[in-house]
Image (cartoon, rainbow, N blue to C red; front, side, top):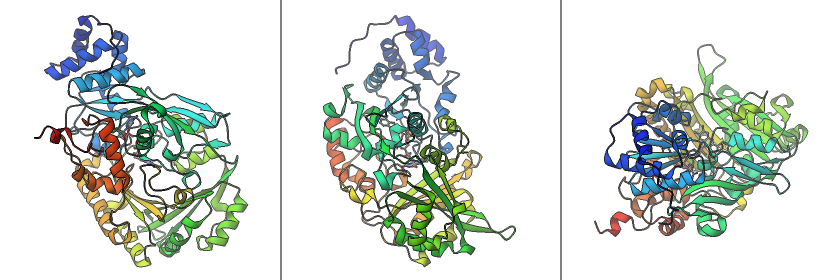
Length: 539
Ligand code: FDA
């Protein structure tokens, strides 16, 4: 173990910590705290970095980055402590003490993990919350930026736009998503047909490995650098920061929205869209959202397909393009709006366009309970298949459900499947993410919503990718399979691993075996080493 020696702090410090917690602690908890308090410099640091369950701020720190209230119930397992490091040495100390005293570590950046894996575990655990690692340095001259993992996408976009209106970054659409988890799983948004995933535009990183070494791209080596750009979080190490390549955008882009419900031929228009959207120029992003809405007939519901998109260009060019390639949409000038790229971030994030400052507000949108599942589609779905999909949205459980369907193609077709762990490239017409939401108060009825989502997924089986049925790791779905708590096998992990990563799963396992053979960094869907420690011991 190559950690630096810290000067021993008075034992009193630990006693203070324990009296702060107000709890009687078992040995491992006590030992962990003792270990950590010895390594942190002073009382004031300890009080800013360690949150025990009896600390009055524990719940607010825990809940501040919970973005799925399905995992915010009294029954949800809670961390024994939340550690919010102020500097790198605090991260290393947390890692060291968690390892030494047998606590699982859950790394949290934005806290958007759809299955709550960054803040829930069935075994005793500690959250390493990177909420103080949010610095962003934008260098417009070299068109790069360093972004710390705890920064949100909103903070990143804001920092870029504060310096220039002709550079951007191709990442996701929800402004409260964290860089740490998002980049670790790929990450796509309105610029991905032009520039690929967020992960495709990462050029360096700063990571702490399981032995506490601080590594950059050169010292971690190309295999590890490959794995952390899409192989899923909490697996290869703690990524502190990422160096990203900024991409050019015009000063004016054009966004549009066209709504078509069942009475307005939504089924036929969506059917046609499947043949066209992936072939459109890569300057154009287009997304279809399917939701239940009020019908024009009082008291009745219908299903709406919302066609929303963005062209890296002006309104005239957009209208000419769509009238030529996709006249069925009936796009008109009143559906379109010219704006800056940063305003388009607000538009796609469902935020008011008045002030970009809202991008810094993590609570700008309500937090709900949700379950997500994802698919990739390679052949157009027949009209009869779309009719069935639409009719499922008329069911009672789908009041707050959406199928989000972004067209693929463009740059995504040009990047080989094995370039990064994210393998879903050429040949995909679109991805479909099915999300069902409900309020925290309805958590007792979550089963009915989740089962609707599972029925929808099952209904889609004939129309989506097969062998494997591919899925997007950033829309994590534990229905696809999980690792055991104590050990995990390659075979077991393969069930979900090939769905997320296709053949790249094998290389991810090799990298994991090399960098973390004892499988310290783990969760229900982390990549396992080839021979799990359990098997090595011959148990
Ligand atoms: P969180 O902190 O929960 O981390 C996710 C995973 O990464 C966890 O396993 C965690 O332990 C690990 N991790 C986090 N930080 C790490 C670090 N520094 N080092 C190592 N491991 C780390 N996706 C997309 O591509 N485009 C989109 O537009 C959206 N939009 C969207 C909206 C909403 C409302 C949700 C809930 C989700 C999305 N996503 C998305 C999916 C999103 O990209 C995915 O959930 C990310 O993993 C979230 O990253 P966070 O850092 O926020 O989560």
